[in-house]
Image (cartoon, rainbow, N blue to C red; front, side):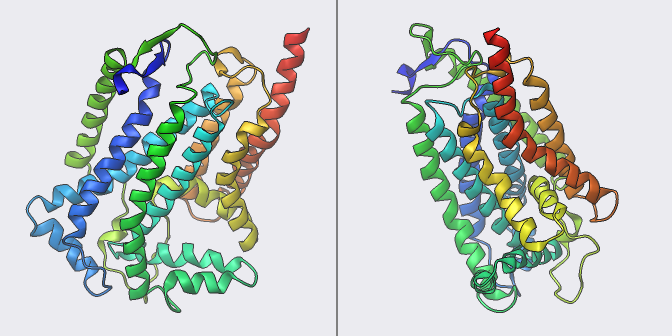
Length: 365
């Protein structure tokens, strides 16, 4: 039973991000199913069907704004959840499998969000799909075949929209299954705590002591979510997506949704097309190897004063990458993006193991 689940007494409100992510997934699935009842996956009718939802369907505007802003809220919660895990060492033994499944969920969520962004068939949807899918052509031998399979032909067209709609509808259920597995495996080693230590008797039942914290976090989340939906519903989107897709008119600046911008900046930081694609995927895959890279005997950053400033530098670096991803690929943005990309990989590949060794030597003497 959930109520009997033992939880460390020291966990804080930062541990509510997991349950909020689950709530976001439920919201996206429910609103997505309702929107799919009125959406038409046809290049001649998709944009019109979205306008029909907004104007003619009862509370259709609310459903669409909840779904569109819900994607942004989902990624905000996911990023906070991941950075919390990085800060407190929640990926270390015995929770490596929990972390790995979480990274896979993150990848599946990114794929689902990208396909969903294409469905309104606005200018940024069409050109974003064209540019991003074209990057797969950089792979030797199989690249062109992958692109043609994604397109369902030789250009982004009706077959592409149908494929993306089908996959966008299907993948959230895979994410839900992975989330259930993620939660089930977490119940074996139990939740981590801010101190990063295992205790034998320092536990309380999840209910009612921690359901209260989750409910409080839920109320704060709903208030913030409602502010975006009712007062600033389009602030996180792109204005060009309210223009119907036109293959003959290229937007002045093609950008993905904001939650992809850090990885888009990493992609553009490498001059070579194939190199950029590989480095972009490596930026996500590297998260799977953090349990192997961190050899520290101390789990939580609470007790790692040497490590802590570099973690916050990573947070700042990620924000810089997001800013660079939203700017044009010209000086000085390209150079700043290259420096930020270098630090991103340097942090995971070198700083994490080096700082662990230095701290080990300091503690020894």
